[in-house]
Length: 451
Ligand code: SAM
Image (tube, rainbow, N blue to C red; front, side, top):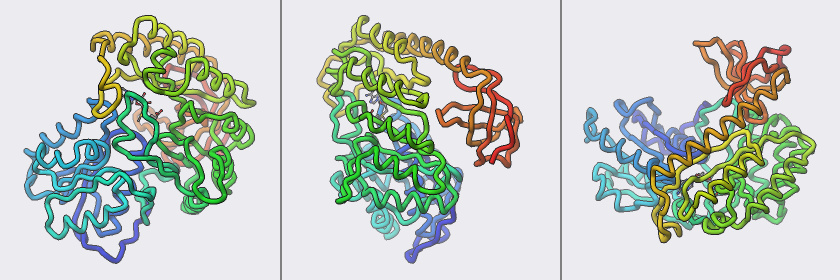
């Protein structure tokens, strides 16, 4: 965590805040920025809502279950000690989705603010500080990407960096365009300046973020492509690892693979959500590619000089998905052999195109398909990880498991590779040889002292 200078308007001096985050990495990073804004105003973070003057929930609405979490938190919180004296704010996607209705549904809430309105957060906080108990930030058309003066970073060696906000796609299942607003790209030169600042502050890994990260287009006259941006970030002296997520197959071009091939700092890992292996279902989902077109992209990645690790997202039981469609998803898994798969049961979301379709697959069948998918993938991962026995990898040490006396490392292909190490090695790079392999992680021995 970096020190946050306290700005001129320290109206929160002496007050505390508790911020809980649900959902994706973008939410995690948004929370780092929100915390930075609060700390710059003199607020101090605390670890539980008990001792907090302001309690904030940064929410996720991608699936119904995720969206419900904030309501169960608010329900439980009502009984908490001094609950009535605290200021409660709901941020992020559920805030944007529910809007002012939140004040009716949960009258204890004083602030409702979607991510596109975070640039206005200091102003919204000032309204709360002056006693307003119904403050909202729900604009979706804000021009600027969220650039705060201070970001409180939770990780000492990996820094998140948002390069594009919002989403202009209209995937039939997805709530994101409605909750995060239209696409806005950050200028390439500003991104590079931020990378340099991050390296100066000691970060060696940069994870660039966007709902559709490869839809990024340089809005400045330089007009860099996404692949060019990746290369330039990798060329910043001191940057050792660059990851990017999430890519959309529609915007995935061969020059991205070429950039990875020619820049060792670009990690050999690509997350490319397919969602379904059936062309019919992909068309219903409005994904903009067929199974064959997706497989062509995979073929291009597999042809790279480096072995690039692949992961994906899959939705089981989308509207109209027949047993045959599902078989095609299983056959795609077998054909691609991903290193990791994030699979979800389809969950109908408000204001999406799919809400107009019949949700034909019963819940139990969705669950059955999900379990089958996960089991098929588990077997693939066991096989793929076993094939790494005896191989040597550089890992970045991300943590330490005291119980096992193991350092938790991560390879550039995004695999967890643990080895007997020391807590002081967190943030260091080490060479490790794989000695055993499970479906989700590897264990190894130090190959030599790191550098
Ligand atoms: N923007 C990215 C894209 O379009 O590829 C994905 C972002 S989303 C946070 C992560 C994943 O959640 C999606 O790739 C999809 O698999 C899943 N997801 C999104 N909406 C869903 C829904 N209504 N039901 C189930 N899963 C969903």
